Each structure stands twice: as C-alpha cells, then as structure tokens.
Image (cartoon, rainbow over all chains, first blue to last red; front, top):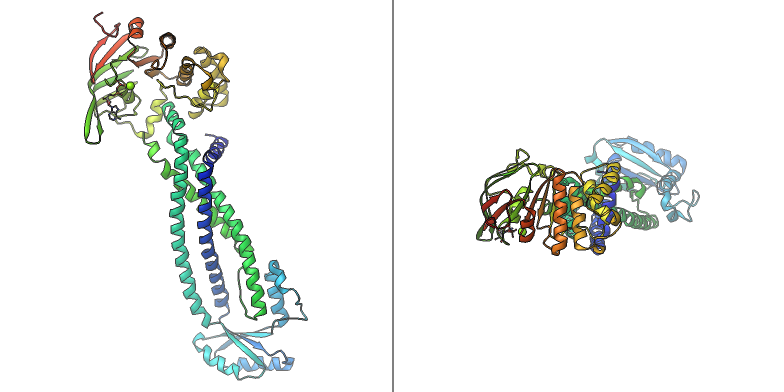
Length: 297
Length: 231
Ligand SMILES: Nc1ncnc2c1ncn2[C@@H]1O[C@H](COP(=O)(O)OP(=O)(O)O)[C@@H](O)[C@H]1O
Ligand SMILES: [Mg+2]
C-alpha cells in the first residue's frame, strides 16, 4: 500500500462530509482549548514552584535612599543572624536586566523605563539553613536599618503546592473528558464517511482487500482531523496566551509585585508535542472504533 | 474445486429460524461449469455466500481448492477471496470511476504493481469486448456492458474460479445470452464457473451441469441437464 494512496484517500474522506468534518473540528478545538487553559495554568504553577523552591527563603528589598556603605553593612548584619545560609546581592540594574531579557518578547510593558529610570529596587536574596525558622529570621532582619520590605518565599510555597495539585487533577479530569468527547465525535464523523463509501468497501471485500487496507484511509482521515484541530488550537492558544501574559506583566510592573510567568516560547514545544499526540491518538482510535462493525463480514 | 459436505445453514432472524440450506452435498471440479438453479428463495444465494465465506455453514464443511474453509481465520478470508472472482445481479460498479478505473481498482487492492495493472487491464477489457469504452463511466453504459465491466473486474486478478449470482437477472434475454456465452468462453480458458440463476431458457440451451435446489434441499444434479431435467 502506497503512502500517497493513503494520504490521497484520507483527504478524499475528509472532504466527503464537509459539514460533519467541520463540526467535529470545531468541537475538538473547543475541548482542546479548555484543556489548554488548564494545561498552561498548570505549567505556570509548576514553573513558579520550581523557581521558588530554588530560592526558598526571602528577598530583602533595600530602601532606595540607602548608601553603598549602608548596603554593605546590611549584608554583614544579615549574615550574623542565626540560620542564614547565603546572602546574594541583586542590584536594581540586574533586576531590570533580568526581567527585560526574559520577557523581551513582551518588551512593550517596560516602555518608558530604562536603567536610569528603573522601577526595581536592589535586594538581598537570603536563603536559610532551616526553613522553619524563617519567621524568626524575618523579625530580626526587619529590625535592621535600610530594609524597605521583605518578601517571603516560603509561605507562598504551601499554597502553590495546593494549587499545583488542584490544577493537575482538574487538567487530568478535563483531559479524560476531552479524550472521550473527541473520540466519540471523530468516530461519528468517520462513520458517516464509512457509510458513504460502504459500496466501495463491500466491493473491496469481495475482491479480497485485507482489513488493514480498507481501514487505513479512514485512520488517516481521523488523524488529519485530529492534527488540524491540534494545529488550530495551538495557534489560537499561543496568540491569546501571549496577549494575556503581556497584560499580566504590564500590571505586575505598575503594581510592583514580582510575578514570574513562563513565556510561550519556553513551552511551545511541549504544547506542540502534547497536542499532536492527542490529535493523532484520538483520530486513530476514533476511526478504529467507527470501522469495527463494517469489517466483520 | 468446490466441495460441500453435509452443509446446512440456518439463519436466525429475531426469534425465527430459517433453514435456507439443508444437508447439501456436491463437488464442482476444477475447470467445470455448473448452474445452481431453483426458484426465488430456494437457497441459491446462501450457497454462493458460503462459498465466498460471507456466511458460515451451521453444519458441515466446505472445501475450496483442497482447503477446508470452515475454520478459516477471519484474517485469511481476503486471501481466499482472491482465488475467486464474483459478479452480482446489480453489477456493483463505482459510479465515480471510469470503466478502466473500476477494473484497475481490483488490482490496486491486491497490491499489484502499476506496470502490471497497465498491462493487465486492457487485456481483460478486450476479453469482455469493451476495449473502446475504457474511459466511459458506468452510467454511460448499457446494462449488458456494465455487467461486462463487472466480469472484467472479477477476472482481472486471474482467479481460479468465477462465481456469479443471478448475473443476467437485470438484463433482457438477448443480452443475457451474450453474457452467458462470455461466461462459457471464460470457462473454456480454464476458469471454474458457478452461476446461480433462475433463467430457465438459458440453462436449457447451455447444456451444462445443473444443480437444482428446492426449499434448501438439493434434489437434482444432472451432468448435462436442463432446468427441469426430465425434458
Ligand atoms: N440474512 C438472512 N437472514 C434471514 N433469512 C435469510 C437471510 N438470507 C436469506 N434468508 C432466507 O433464506 C432463504 C433462502 O434465501 P436465498 O439464499 O437468498 O435464496 P435465493 O437466492 O435462491 O433466492 C429465504 O427463505 C430467505 O428469506
Ligand atoms: Mg438470490
């Protein structure tokens, strides 16, 4: 059986029932998008978890008016405190550049700022030898001069773990529902094509075509629908994700909250692999189910 | 060679059981020409379907070319069918394919090479007398011509036997006779031919073996008989 024959027959099938194919494409895209929403939230929560885990402890922001000497003294004072492990200085220029580089694709939100008109504060990232003592350490650091505010990096983690687990379960549930709905829809669409070509199938059987020869064009049909739905979903998802991330970054700058989100470019490969896998899997299973009855004779 | 050994077939339709064939025994040798005759509903198509393994016998064994097909795995059925060409009363051509494509289709399905297809299809079209009509579509042909296309398709893969279920049922008597002569020509070239029919006149004129079935029971088997043997 030639590859070109398969692809040709598969496309012929796709266009045999345009309405039904269109409907199943749309429904598959919708379900894939709902799944994508939770998938992306999950990816971001996981990402935040990893980021935070790697720097558990706290970030001590330094008053803008602090002098270099005061900043150096602050470091020595912090290091004297029990349970403090490391103290790493992040200048406001560094903070600016880190954000600017990571989110270069969303550059617009930093418009009007530069190294000299810098919205960030310098800080010390403090890690601890014992996380359970973070409150004690915090109260001691708070008493020191030049400290503007302290952002804890250990409290958020428990909440995040809860969120991450929740999101994981929800997206798993949605994934299962998505798979069932999509298989049902695709198999119904293919049933229509099989029905439209039943005469051809029956002739093929009398002439001695093997079941796989009869079945493959319909599997290709299912795969084509699945893959097209996946590609449309990836496109819509990518564009809207970029818009949303851009908006969030903008507001996080104006509200001075530090928030770390995944740029789409860092997850696009994973999204493509997951979606194509789903499309191909759902398409072929759907068509095998729809063909079962017809191949018995 | 086709051999039926004590073959019975009972259909179950809902709660009712219909015994379409009862204890059939016969052998059709390689190269033979045999008619299966009987009134409508007597069980001819059921015999044919069991030869094609479209239906399985409820009892007994069917041996095709020396192999008992009774317990043949479903996966092997396509290969059994490649040893027989089939034609039906309603031709069963694909309307959106030309004459040439309808015939080539049968070769494509069994993975014939394009070169082989290009050589074989014109040959078989000339055998059935349709050389000039290769590019036409089924709806542009007469009933007799359509049945010739179906015959060409059945023969194109060189099967050892040709099975025909009422091949002349939709044709006028003259065209029907032409088709029967063609079937006879095919038989002369060495192909075993089995024809189910209730066309009495033709069967009488052909002077071939006649297996007569009545209400599922084979009651006559004449080597050179007519539809009603005593005549
Ligand atoms: N699929 C089926 N289910 C139930 N009964 C059937 C089926 N096919 C045929 N029959 C019955 O079996 C008998 C023989 O039918 P058939 O073999 O088609 O006869 P013929 O071809 O000689 O007209 C008839 O009584 C018919 O109603
Ligand atoms: Mg019949």
